[in-house]
Image (cartoon, rainbow, N blue to C red; front, side, top):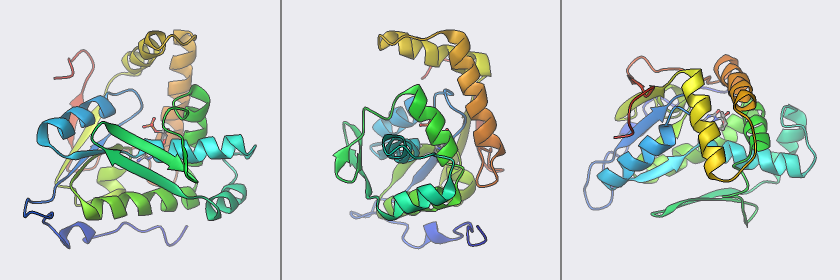
Length: 228
Ligand code: DC
């Protein structure tokens, strides 16, 4: 864990994209259900930049662990798994596709079981290294709008603009619950709220790169505010 250091200065190395346009990194961090991905997608769309959903990476690794019957909180088991894991994201204009060992995981990672396992696995330092290396490599190549928990504080501390997007726990749970209903899934509001509370606690209290507003981030509370 000692070698888990912020990557200072990295983003100033190559400030232009191919074609001469200034390379931008827009970091959108915050807790689950705050509206990060909706806003990030829209911002990327309006500005003509690519959107990277970093949570999908942790979700994909969590799903592989679950499918292999591993404990997503067990560092030794997960370290072994990662040594034999090829994680890839395809940043297509019509949405991000996530692949593990050549198999597409894009749809299957959106379940409550995977959400919880992703929260557990993302607390492990081996897992964070694995995902952060990939995130920085992608951000070295192109302009990105990234959403996550630690983009502004750890992954890209020199991001061009940083936002911390949040909303009350009840509102975030209500949004997630309504999304489930729209998708025709079963569930009840109280369970969604409790899951979200648990995940908030895990993600904000872990030792490594917890969910946290960067000092230079702009705070946006989306409670009661429309997406636009
Ligand atoms: O944003 P999401 O719900 O898809 O993220 C799933 C989990 O991954 C979340 O509980 C915390 C973790 N995560 C993280 O630790 N760092 C990120 N940059 C993104 C997600």
